[in-house]
Image 1 (spheres, rainbow, N blue to C red):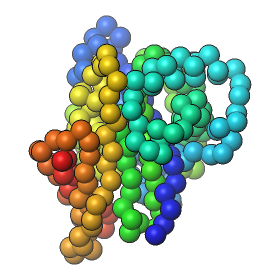
Image 2: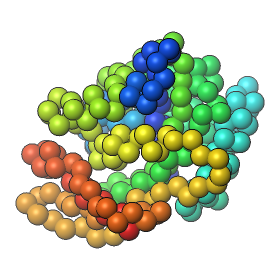
Image 3: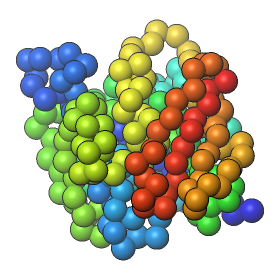
Image 4: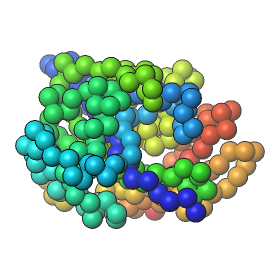
Length: 247
């Protein structure tokens, strides 16, 4: 079995108009992965990447921001192994990855108090590369600027969740299954919480193969008996088709 690699994905969002702050006006930063990559080539995702050993020991001027963001994350009950990791290490990895891929300085443009843990996604056991990915979210200033690294990320832009899903359905962009699932549930995921909460874990429990397309059956907590289907348009690309069964 291929071992899991820990990674952090960041759902970076802003208000399209600072004077209109309704959920429908939220824009999300989507990045297009290089078509030359081995994993998810050409797909549109939230930026992020794998954690590095140096993230646990790196100390710099970001410490005040990391401390404030760690306090915001302290209400989340993360599934293991994330529950055993230092929040400052997780945040340092997030800051580094966003800067490397999109040249976006979250310390300068990001609201540390808005940081939230959304979910954890694990790739199927049958995958040649497996990731255990923590999804975080953060609000940034409307003045935040981005610039792709041109290596892993070849394009990046801001879209509302409705716009992204519409473009995905029309075949103009291709959202990775976890990205689309997150966008579909984003209003609930970003809703403010006053108490501690459990972070959902999405992990395939078995895989079926039908016409070279994998169907992943996943289970998450807290329970929700309403299964939903994503990713059917990926069949022509030979990619994963996810059927997520909550509960």
